[in-house]
Image 1: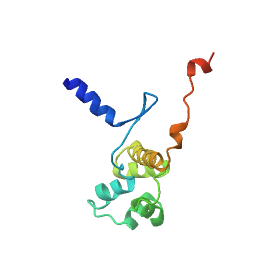
Image 2: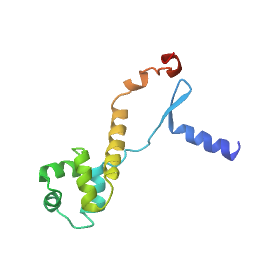
Image 3: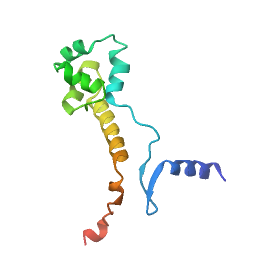
Image 4: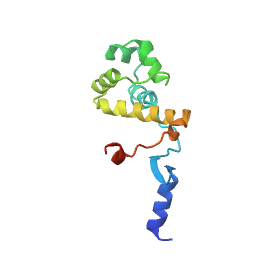
Length: 125
């Protein structure tokens, strides 16, 4: 088998295929919740407390604690606040949350895989 064919075969192992068509990439591990990233990459290295960061962000300690303990989601408003406080982009926090949420939804149910595709060419005729 050629190196190119081996690479292609390896890539296909990580895809969800339905009716011979690739519908998405399959993950092999749970993506990090944004709360874990916040805790491990910002709060702990900067020796921040939840209370102090909540004050800086102008949010409740309970709201921030829920995110850090991976019980609550990062909202667009929180993404904006975190980006301002840590000089990142809001998209960083929002994309971390979206990636995590999508993984959880994919694992929770497979019913979505039974939704038929709409043939756009026939639908517009």
